[in-house]
Length: 229
Image 1 (cartoon, one colour):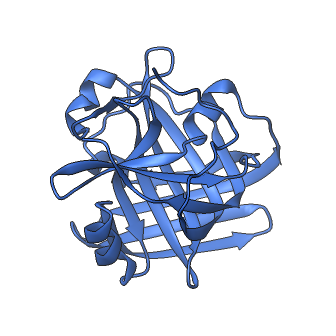
Image 2 (spheres, one colour):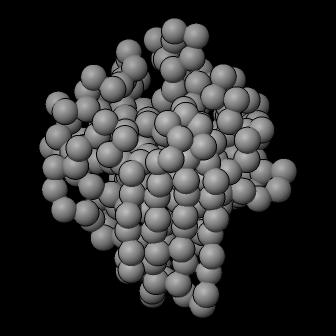
């Protein structure tokens, strides 16, 4: 039976491992046809759906972990045979080279190395990324204007209240749990968007983009990975 998706994280079992700050996040989403992405999922998982649609997200943000650096992830939404709702990364740009091989090999997360910068002037934020490895040259540019505080819709809660990720490592599928407080959200008006990463992910949107959201961030903690299949 599938677990409920709620804004509050389930209690993370011990041991609680690495803690991180996720800061200055923007959330962009498009609907996708579940059948068009099912082949991208590891054994024991499948596309998670909300009213018949699955979704793909583009999420640039700032990571604070032994210093600050930028990331941009392309993510799908997953559910496993135990009913756990999670995310499945198609790629995750990172500006810190040392992170890429450690997490790519150690956790099975498809980290890539990119030259990245984020600039802010008042309520206007720009994220810029150019891939260095692999598939050098893929670019992503997003500029938003941050607006008023907003309450998330049921779909937006479903998309962002994700308490773990599904990964593939050593020929096995794994569940990596996390916990954090409810997201504080503000409206985000897109000023400019030019992105190669979504197209390179092999995922084709099936509809118009949902409204964009911005969050100043949360403090998160991770638990020990467990085997799915």
